[in-house]
Length: 218
Image (cartoon, rainbow, N blue to C red):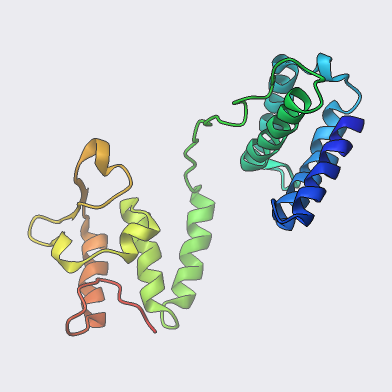
């Protein structure tokens, strides 16, 4: 704990000299005081091991997976806190001489398994009711959401969709610019009757010289 506070003092001094931004110091101070000191503050620097840090990381990631509405650190918060802990350990190693190696090095760089979640029938029914109520007020945005539900396309893909990518005869959309294009090339989105109807209705929004299916409403 004392070493952590000493480190924060050195960071504040650097901020006063213009070597570090005040915002960075505030962020580091917050993570140290809210997360790092409560978790590791009672340990001697030499007792801080990679295993202990990984155990803390696992517990926080497990908490982040709980969708109970409670405010939690979250995956990105865990990553950010570990990067700050690594910077603190570098100080303990290189300047304070309290440890011989950095046990937190690289532990803030990790990927998490993405879990797909689909809307339940109840959620779909509620969403459909809301969209129906807003259809006259915001017809374009209702169409964007409905097309996303029917095709699985991302919001950005729909908003950037151009008419030259739509093939009504073949009943498909050819996405040449999408998130996974480097590994999978162009992606084909097949269109059912409902999706085709949305695109046909979208022609009423066409503007001369504008290539987008869903042009800006500004």
